[in-house]
Image (cartoon, rainbow, N blue to C red; front, side, top):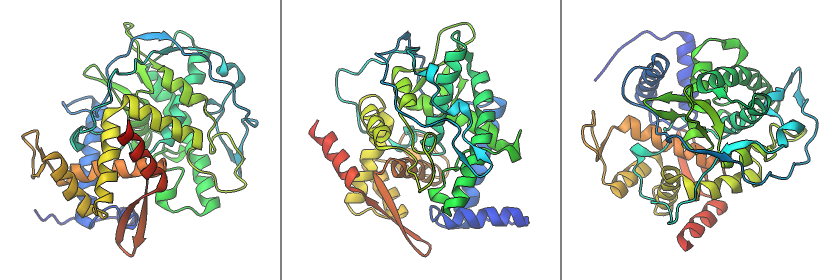
Length: 374
């Protein structure tokens, strides 16, 4: 289908910037994904429609596991220029005390690792730093209000605070001259856009929302947060989310005299261990992508073809059967998984002009062998 339209200078700039990430084949793929993503956002905002982001059911609330040792951290007033990390995203001494958290029960058998791409975590949930910020903020909120906070209130409060954090991270990006794919501010809203889609999107994608009895968003999909069974469901940290929140983070907790990583080694090791035990869709994505790249599927086209073969999928214009998937949705799922894996150093991307090539890192090789040996 061919559609012609007038584009504003701002729209053309945005399209050029997206093409510059090398994650899209051409202009048509950028526009197609933008339309689908915006339609998904509209449904999330209006709470209509039947589609939802892959999510997790309610988890029974229990006591937290033994308190994590309090990390040695600098003062929370870390700043870049005129901006600083908002206190709600920092470790505050009272927050290191034990809190109630939702218990996670480790499966008795290894996770099923053949979950197809359509059931992976939604591709737009493509950054771990926003999920880290949400866990940290929720820890502080829960400590201040032991009775908990309604899911919708948590999404609103944390997303507004994330605007200030986004401003800080954008200054950090500018100071370090980071490219878009390396940006710390990616996925964070800004105070320049209060009330706009970016803040609403952050609340839905990186804090959470309850739709059709399911908790949506990346922290819920990773089983770092859950909601209780009260009349007005309240967002709670799981025991894993509590541990993750307390781990020091190089961006939120340390000075920025040199270029920090998005996540520290302890955070990455924690996530890999947690995902391999509790999050089958994410584990399946990691193994499929690593195996595909190692078998020669090192470009977006080849990796999509490999994933279709691995999971018996057929590309269609409109899916009607379980083994069918649209090219746009497969692209969304693949790029999301690649971005999350890059955040935790399992894969990397090399660019030559408009072409991008994937490679498996040494930590990625070690992770694959560890899962294979289990």
